[in-house]
Length: 351
Image (cartoon, rainbow, N blue to C red; front, side):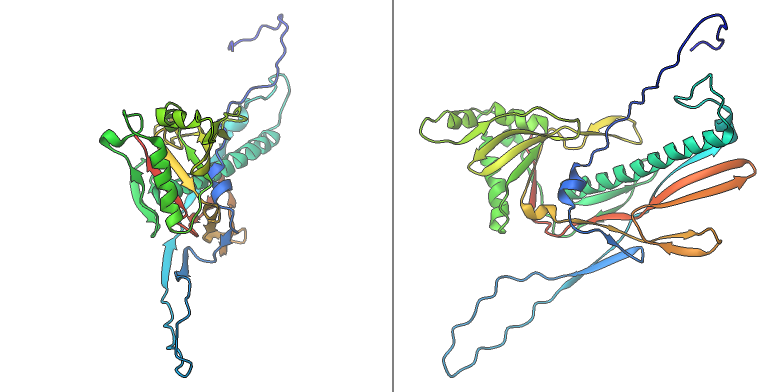
C-alpha cells in the first residue's frame, strides 16, 4: 500500500483475508472420548490392577476350595505440565490501524482495544488446544509427552508405562523392497493386538505407507482372485485438510485403512510437518478411544489480590500495567493425556 493516498483518486477497501492453518483435532476427538478429569492439585495419581479371567477350582465334595489370593495393584503418579499463551496490548497498538480496519472510519482506542482482546483471546485458546492435540498424538505414537522450553530443548518427558513397543522394519524387510509383503506386516500387527483380546478395526497411515500397499504385487494379486473377495480399494474424496481419507478395506484382517495428511507448524523452526509420518502405521482397537484428558489445578492471584487455585481446562487472566501502559491477556492450562487401555493400539515404522 502506498504511504500517501491521493485525495483525487477513488478507492474502496474490501474485507481482508486471513489465512490460518486449520487446527488438527483428530487424535483428541478420536482417542480421548473418556470423561475429562479436573484435579484440585498439580499432581494426579491413580491405582491400576490387572487380573486375568478367574477360573473355579475342581474340588472334592467334602473338601472346600482354597481361597484365592487378592491381586496386588500399583499406583501411577504424574505431574501435569504447565502451558501458557499470552499476548499484550500497548499504546502503539491502539494508535495504529489494525488488520481489516477501515482506513476511512474513525475508531476510538477503547473500540480498537476490545477488537484486539477478542482476537487475542481466540488466539490463546487455539494455542492451548493445539498443544493439547500435540500431547495426544505424542502419547499415541511415541508413548510419551515431550516438554520443551522456548528454545526447543527437551527439559523432561512424561512417560506412560505399559505402552506397546513399536514395530520397526529395517533392511530388506522394509515396505517397498522387492519380495516384502505389506499384508504380512498388517497381519502381524493385527495378531499382536488380538493376542491381548483387542480386535482392531481401523488402521491409519501416512501417504507413503499407503502407496506401498497400493503398489504391492501381493495385495493386487489377491484382490484379482475370481472366487474370493480379499478387499476393495475405493478411495473417497478428501473433505477437509484435517480429515481422514478412506482408502481401502481388507477382509483378512478385517480392517479399514485411512490416510492422515494433516500438518502442524513447529513453533521453533516455523516449518510445517506431518503429524503422522509417511512411513508410520497406527492400528487400533475400539478400546483405544477410551483414553481421557486430565487437567491439573492452576494457582493464580484473583481480582481481590488473593491466592486461589482454579480447576478447569482454560484459566484466563487479564493484567493491567500502568507504567508503561500495557494490557496482558494470558490463558494457562495444565493438561495431560492419560491412557486407559494402553495396549489397545500398535504403531509400526514400515520403511
